[in-house]
Image 1 (tube, rainbow, N blue to C red):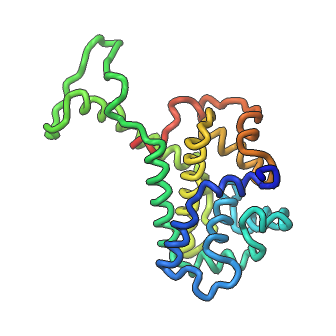
Image 2: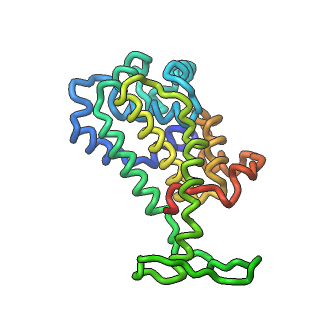
Image 3: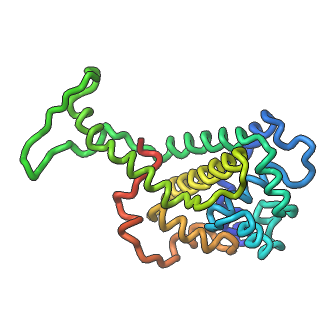
Length: 248
């Protein structure tokens, strides 16, 4: 029952492990592995990302502080700095890359909005409509106006990535380790987006991330966690204009 599950364990229940296992088999990720599997590796990196750890050592210290909970958190009992560093260096990054793309696709399907259905572009200040020159003749004038109006969202999105994925430093020195860390961070964000949708949370992504960062090892039902946590809105970071990965 949920009262015996940690918050992080409840979160990862939203992940499609079967698809991840398929990718592990595809790239022989767990060949000759006895203990610290690719799944353990992914969850460890996601735990570090969601709890705002800043280094590999920082991740391990946080996990060791909850050593008795590791198995029930889904991390396994063999999370060590050497195991994680070795896995990040040697395991095929494509497992994590393709899973990140898969989760992004799932989150986009659930969360995407159609930009062609936005409120009509109209400059109230000048009391006029604008005409745009374009060679995309298959689109309507309204569609072209909406595209021009929303192209700035791309820049806002990259700003959002810097703020929310919070990759301040890389946890490994090899290209493979860096790729795995980045894709695991994207997986963590996509997971939050999926949870937001499936639970119909009336919280900004910023709020959800902040609440989770302090609660991953708590035994609290997710619904209670998000409904009862008092959180002062930060309008600069959690307002309605917050850029969204899945609106493009």
